[in-house]
Image 1 (cartoon, rainbow over the protein chains, first blue to last red):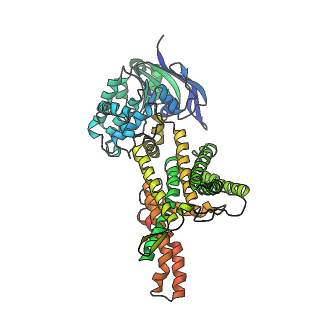
Image 2 (cartoon, rainbow over the protein chains, first blue to last red):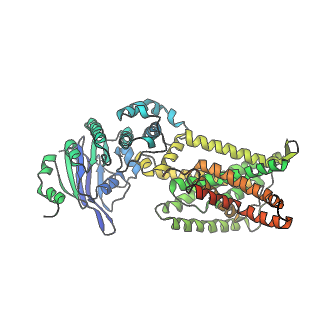
Image 3 (tube, rainbow over the protein chains, first blue to last red):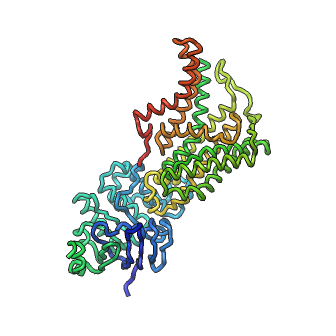
Length: 248
Length: 304
C-alpha cells in the first residue's frame, strides 16, 4: 500500500456553466515530485486554489495525511503543512528581501499575534533568516527591496518563503512561467535539492521541466484527471497524446 | 505675525484631527479595498461615549479610554457583521451598505441621547490659555490635541515599521493572497485593522468633543474632508494621510483667515470679503484638483 500524503476524491467546482473541476480524483505519494499537466484552460490553477483553501469546492473531499481538510481555511492548511507558491510572483515589493523572509518565518512560528515585538529582532528570525536566505541564494541581496529583484530572483524568494514554513507538501504553480533559460536551470536545481525532503506538487507548462523532474504525472483535461502514471506511462498514453495534439 | 502663528497652530490642530480620521480610512481602503462611508460614524460614537463617560465619571481620561474602547469594539462588530460580506462585492455595494450604516448610527444616537446636542467641557486641568511667545496666547486644550495627535502618529509609525503586526499589515496591503498563503489568519488581521481604524476615528471624535458640539450627524462634515485628505495623500498610504491632513488643515485654516485680507489689497472691502470667503471654502478642493492634475494617484501612491 503506497503512502499517500494527499488524496483528492471526487472534487467538483463549477463557475456558472463552466466546470473547473469535474469529479476530479488523484493521489500524491509522499516524497514524490508529482506533476499536474494539461492543456491551457484545463483547470490546473483552480485545482491548486482548491487544495490551498482559497476556493471552496462544491462537493468532494481533500485528505491530507489522511485528515479531511476540505473545510479548513487557508491558514489552517498552511499550519497543517500545505505550502504553496503562486503563478504570478507574489513577493511583497514594498518590503526588503530580508523582511519578506522574516514575515514568512514569523508567520510559521506560531506566535503570530505577539505583535508588539520588533519584527526583525525576534529570536526565530535571528536563528533562521541567514539559512533561509542562503538556501535560495539571496543572502547577498538581503537588504534590497524585493521589488528591485529580477524575475527569477523573485521566484527564488517566493519558493524560499514557502519553504520556511517547512511544508510537508509544497505546491508550485507554474514556477517556471516567465523565467529565462538561466532562471529555469537555477530553479530546477533548487527543486531537485528539495526532492526527498518534502513532497512537491508541480503544476507546469514546460514539458521538458516536467519530464526531467517528475516521479509521477497526472494529466488534467476539462477539470478531470484522465491519466496518472510514471513519465514513461504518460508519454505512451494515447488518450494523453490526443488531448495534447487535438481531437482525432 | 502673531495672528499668522496662531492660525498655523489652528491649522495644525485641524490637520491632526483629520490625520486621526484619515489614517484609519486609508488603511481600511488600502488593505481591504473597502470604501467605508460610515467612518464618520465612529468619530461620532467616540464623541458621544467620551462626552457621556466624562460627564458621569468626572474624568476626561476615563472618557478618552471609553471612547477608544467603544469606537474600536463597535468597529470590529461592524466588520464581523457587515464588512465581511462586502469584500467580494463591487464598490457600489460597499458604498450603499456603508451609507446605510450612517443612517443607522445617526438614528441610534438620537434614540439613545436624544436630539439635543451634548456639550463637553474642557477638563479643568486643560483649561485656560498659555502664552507661547510674546503676545501669542493659545488655549491649552488645543495644544493638548496637537500633542496627542503627534504622539499617535509616532505610535502608528512604530507599529508599522517596527512590529510584526505592522509588517503583516504592510504585507497584506500589497498582496493578501500571499499573506494568507504564509499561514496568517487574514480574517482576524482584517478585523484588527478595521478596529484600529475605527479606534483612531473615536479618538478624533472625543478630542473634538470640547471644541465642537457633539450631535447626531457630526461625522459627515469631517468625513468629506477626510476623503479629500486621502485622495490628496494617495489612497492606502499612511504617510500620505499625514502629509495630506496637514496640507488640508493648513490650507483650509489659512485660507479662511487670510484670503479676504489678501483680496482687500486690490478690491473694495465688501467685494473682497465675499470673494475671499467663497474662495477660502473652495481652497481645499482647488488643492485636491491641482494635486490630481500633477499626480493622479495622490502624493504618495501606495503599491498595488
